[in-house]
Length: 164
Image (cartoon, rainbow, N blue to C red; front, side):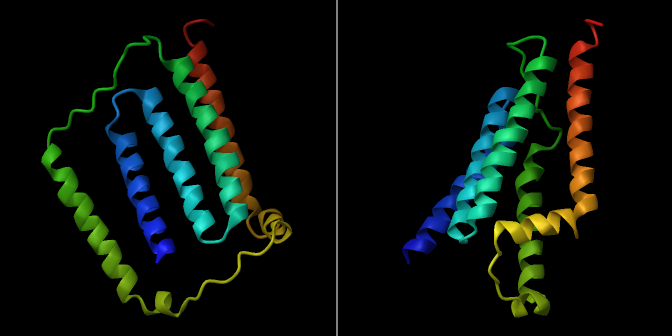
């Protein structure tokens, strides 16, 4: 019972921080809300008894990606008091579309027989996950590293464009 309440509380915090990322006018605040969301996701991994994934979530995403995003925002933001306009032509459509998409996903999950047959298995140890990264998922792992490098180079080029 206590675990269920904890998961519900974590889910509510996760949704609230995700909404805060989207509606925040300040880019720096949006990045900090994203960091809070990623830490909350790590808490879900802890609740699912996957401590390695929780540690990777905190170290890699919350530590590395958020630092890189803040670096990019701070370098490209010329006016410190500027705000990001978030006006929409149809703001009333966001909630119904999100609820419809969520309902569609839930129906798809509940009606897929293959998902009902799946049972959670232990995640394995760090050595097994490391071998999977360097064997089965090597191309995806390397593609992600190239993508992150391109993002860093892009942020540097945008920041140095007027100074070159």
